[in-house]
Length: 398
Image (tube, rainbow, N blue to C red):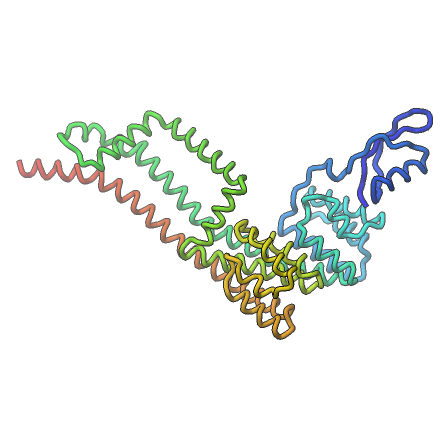
């Protein structure tokens, strides 16, 4: 059932507008006809609004509160009302909760109410709730989703935290180089101009310093243009695909990223399959949570293979981007007839390994950034010291 915004005309020719819930266009016609109105125009009210996705942390808290309140015997409508009145939520979350409540009060299932707010909830949670409503285990499923999104939020936080130090070092490299070329090297210009000859590296450094001093605004504009180009390139699917492919092929880092991608896929597949959702639907949803378009593109063939009657193990073996531990564990589960149990086990193991992988990535990136900073600064210092030392040596010899 959806909420429609309509314009209708009564018997006297007066045009009226309003909002009405209906299951279809025909249902909307019939409801308005019963009120003596003739439908003129209508639009889906949900599509007229611009929604933004809830963050992972908000999804975890949303599911946790639903699961906890339902488990305590509180009705779904009352639970949603309590959640919407919580002072700790953001104004946007309050609006979302109230809109969901308005749907549920009219008899719309929770999963359907969530789907009526396009873009707010990912397919994973709506499909999980739909399966739970059919089995009567909404409270248990909601708590399971809360646990999953909490784990995902922690992983995202770790990745973000891990990248903070490299970002700071990158910024420092830019600042240090800008200060040296813009303020330090110009101090030596008068000295170097008096010398008969300069090392080639020093001449390059001084030329760059002169350019920075005269055309610093050009560099700022160029940096802004480059940023805009990179920003728009990230919006092009073909570019994103190639970059995602490069990431998993990169030495050292690629192997660690494969562990993280495999862990995400395994946890999502585990949650969906354990809830009784068909394996093809599980794969269609789980692929969207991986976070790598190159791997996601390969799932069209995986799904076709499963639909053709092949085992999940053989279908996933050809995926480039997962570690072998995933298929070997699934193979054991399929042969033993306990795929759901094995998926739980492999998901937990891979999450532990993904935590270690994140730590290892930082251990690789930090020294590299420090070496780069030291190399840049060292090269500049040598370019300055070499001619000065040469001039002192000449004076001493004379």
